[in-house]
Image (cartoon, rainbow, N blue to C red; front, top):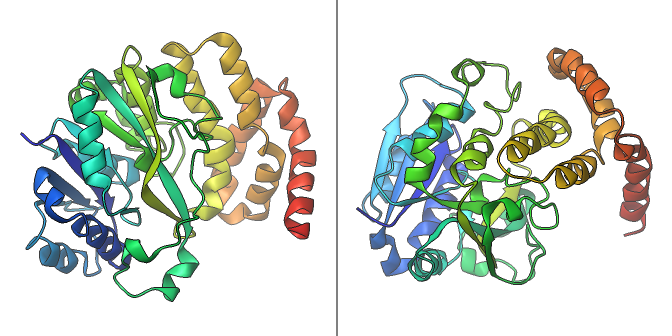
Length: 333
């Protein structure tokens, strides 16, 4: 059994998948120490050809679904086919840096009792990809990219202490941030609601939006965790096909996620504090959904109920002024 699997759910993104796999290949001899698990959600592009090319150089465990099973279930499948002790789930549009694999394996080796590692990541605008050769060489990217988490010190802690917007503003929503012990994950798959998972309406519940958060909240509630401040991956923004529904994820599902952390050890005072933080975009996000009514109308009743349940949080109303401040700052930047 290998120590680490890099798990990649993918669907019709062969262009970005090639960049992703090439970045893994650039890790040199260390790639022999990892397994790459790809779950293909019945792609109709040349994903399989890209995978077959990189199979010559990388130990790839490739599974192709016979039909599109949805985003959440494809994430679960990418982990399910892993044969390693730890898993690192990354997006098909994410990339690793040159020494990422070596550094993660060394972390796992040094921190034997740790079950969950938070691995920092860089943001990178997908529009800038055109300025680089293809497939991209991550060594050519700027050294001053913005990190996902601005926390600058490594530390070991209890898992629940990582649920802090000063560390992770989306409460571990970013898949690419987590390296975790697979055994813990497997034991808590039953916490997912299968009916919710099978709901084909994208982001209609916590299970088909953040299945990993729900599993994490149970699987690692008593676990030692480690925060790695050094960014070891690159997360592209601007690629998401579901951008119009991001307001649902940011202003509703993030709050839903906090409820599960609370069930599994997050103190009540932090629950209120973090929910208030998560609602700082609420009214602007609702307005965006109303403007995009054609795609968002199935969610509007739930949003009304959500508002009634959370109407006592100050940031829900202050979100208008926060947005005004952000707009002014952006204008003068």
